[in-house]
Amino acid sequence: MADAIARLATAAGLVGLNSADFLSRADGFDLLEINPRPGATLDIYADAKGSLFELHVQACRGRSPEPCPTFPGAAASAIVYVTRPCVLPQNFAWPDWAADRQPPGIRVAAAGPLCTVRAEADVAETARELVRRRTAAILELAGRSR
Image (cartoon, rainbow, N blue to C red; front, top):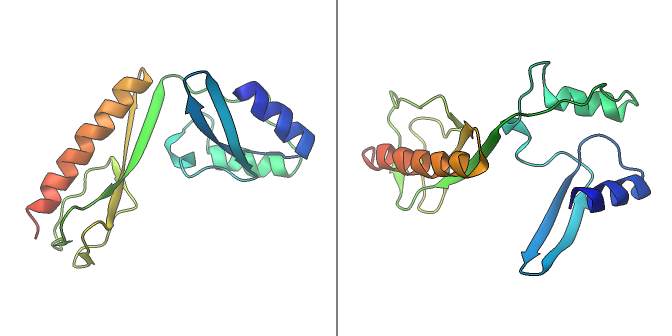
């Protein structure tokens, strides 16, 4: 998959960070599109030297990082949607692993976005499981705020 993206991005003259969407099937994959911009999950990646978005800006200006950053472990994120309407109180205690938070006092309609949850772990499945647990936890906290 990475090889296919690299060849297409090079052929299209893309620079910086780009995102790609795939459809997975039993006998392989189909590349649906390459977006000439960073993907929505850009903020879950961190490196010891600074912002990944800053590296994207530098690459767009023709300056590629040497060496390219590496990211040990795995990261995951998910948008949390409420199942029933809720209004968060002014003193709602957001955990630090929640981002894109709805402000207190705002009514969030059923099926509306509440926040994004993030997790980091040594392996992808552990990060995904932690996101699932955090999603359940934040929905439980929001459920008490109706």
